[in-house]
Image 1 (cartoon, rainbow, N blue to C red):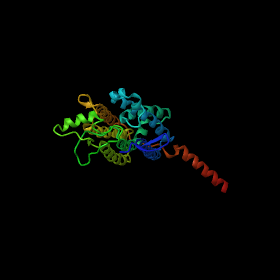
Image 2: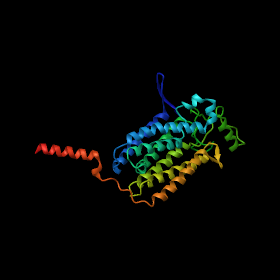
Image 3: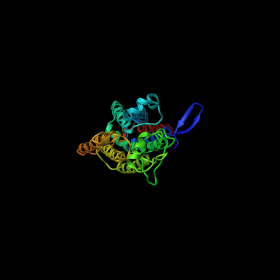
Image 4: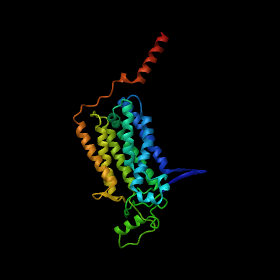
Length: 298
């Protein structure tokens, strides 16, 4: 894998950061288009994207450090400022809370905006997982012997048996009668997550066109994202924290329940109708200028 793309003097450019930037650019582009289609005024996509970057990265890093607290204790500075090592749910939770506060300050119904953002969130997650794959930051799965198994000898968390005792121990548990390879092949779970993210994005992108109550599409997103992550976690190395479930699975289960409850609640609400076109200040200004030009001609 390629955790570092290139360097210019003391500055290093990492593959994870590059894919994260691409994820936000694609998500912001699609979000802007949906905001225009749903006539959400004012246009706050850029502000929300910036807020999501800051809070998303901060929340992701915080949850990752909590999830890997033993590794953090061994190397607190290195883990806190490493280019990889982000936990998606931490970023989603903190960014969602921050954006709700911001959207309310702009008098924009949060659920209407979240509906517009749902497809963008899904595709952004999938692209970001390719960054995890390139960085080899430990998001890969358990040892396996499948034809598409991969190794990450140069990753932030390498799959070398001499440098990864947790992975070595798991290999011995799964294959007790076989010698441990120097470089242990594992499930490329970031690819699995990329694939299901693209599938779910296509579903959300199609569903967005049908008239629904406000919040309906966002709650569907929560359920789809949670189900995908819950299943992938069964072949990840994350330790169990609650009833045999990993931290990510426990959060995914909670997200599924929230999504199901949300769908039940909003199903009783009327269809969300976008504001009328004349409510768009940009359109009003454009129309005013058009009339002024016409009067000058006359």
